[in-house]
Image (tube, rainbow, N blue to C red; front, top):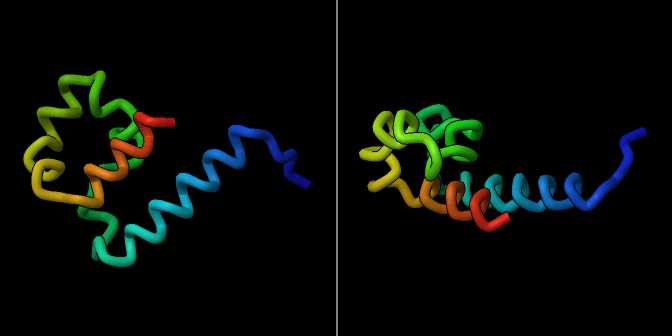
Length: 70
């Protein structure tokens, strides 16, 4: 039995929102990995690796925005 916490609720809400967005995003394997999205704005190496994709991908832009606002 899982213990429900605010963090669990927030995470489930974020995942549900991203799942809804992903329906139009196509193959999820072509997008920014979740862990990279978490640190996209803080890590130069991650930005350098994924910036060109993120600039042209609404899904990844929303993923970063959602994670950074939480």
